[in-house]
Image 1 (cartoon, rainbow, N blue to C red):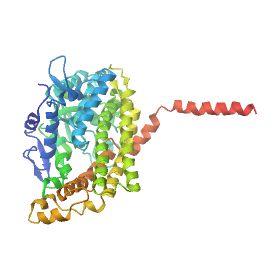
Image 2: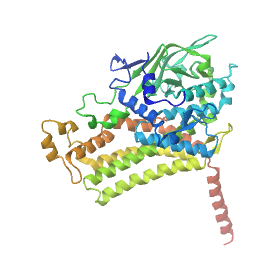
Image 3: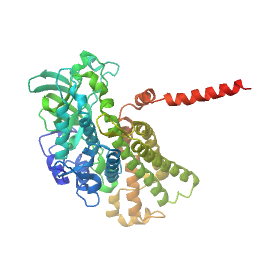
Length: 491
């Protein structure tokens, strides 16, 4: 089929999936107020693939079929192809200002990375070879242009114990095996975009001791969201259902991508949909062996460039609108955001420029600039929000609903809420945008997401230090010690 339209995407979501929110089952995620905004935004991304000015950036013609496919699905077999894919990732992120974190290209690049590393999946301890399965799945999602979510975190019960030691055993695990496949029961956290995805990829939980007791919890597979026995229990939406006007919460309305705990009740997984089975060792190594982390982070850091552009632009826009950008302290804060934006761009540019070829004939970006960017971003993003709040100050709560401009006191509102550079309507719209970006429930969820979506930043920083190639740095110190010692002996 090749690239889908937004209409085709939305039609594909109207199935028998079980989505629950606020004590009720959702009948249609494309029209439900909790999910329709994000669903429409994803539909817009699909339509961008057909637009004349973006089609060649976001898609390419597949040599095997002659159909157009999303560049994010394509295996980067050269550095140039990787850079070209990076441009597509950034163009997608620009449409959402980086605020819709889990756009389809995130999982697209991930599945492509797994498919490129097919030999990794052919060494199952049970004697089964799953490499053909991951290749077939990659072709399936690329040819049908599907949107995927993934889950890989076991429930928070007792973090001091291994998953197989939990007294309250609710983690997803194998409960039965047959000739056709196996059955799983339990839950996984947290499926971002799950409610409006076509499929879920259950990725390995990478915190499993290499112990036979953990085998029932060690697997990877993919299933349609409407699979019988699969239920999605959603967090409450941050979309304000009773808002006075759409423009009061424009970001929440468009970009609340949803998060859900996925519960599997005796769900059947066919062998052909299986990638890893009862293999704790591979689960723990899969990110490194397949370069999955590098490709995931390439997408996410490309997205954060767009997010930094938006937040820096928003802070400067607000400052200009109320003429506080003439003050040195404000100029210093705005310069700080612009410097950070340039840092993010430089990290990604370096990662692409110093990409290396993998053992699988594909190219992967340099992980060290990308992981540096990721570990740096969550703190810098919190700072960006703080600058927006500081510059906007009382204006964030000092303007009414945009609906008042169209109500019975519209003339009064037009008179009393103007600023030096804006009419009342313009100022209210801007301040409501700034409020949604900095003090709303949507803003709070954005901060949490950036901090934890790749795991605990403290543990990631420890891993960064332990794995960073430090020998050259030590060599620099040894050289200086040697030179200093030699000079000392001459005196």
